[in-house]
Length: 98
Image (tube, rainbow, N blue to C red; front, side, top):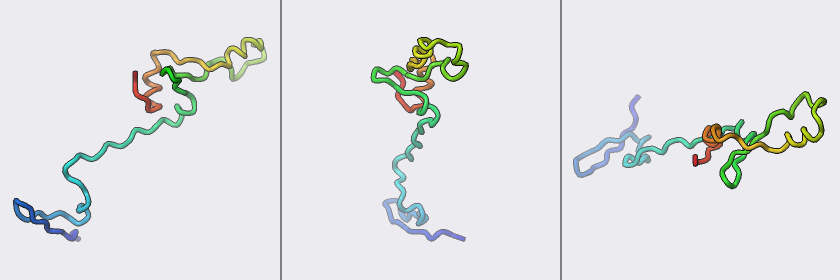
């Protein structure tokens, strides 16, 4: 089965373009797909106003009976992620690397 063809007359002569492609712009390249934010990373990390990555610290989910209340309180604060891991997390979050 053939597509119906629209004939357009230009300077070089008749040019045939299938009707399904008549609305497309052939002068500029197609836009790249947008980067999607990693859904797991956006639940676990946040970028501070200064550009640091903040996340949850360790030692606060289980085996809490033997830990003192002071120790549990201190571990409950958000932890700053190491500089080495920042670029990877920022890429997942869709932020520009700094």
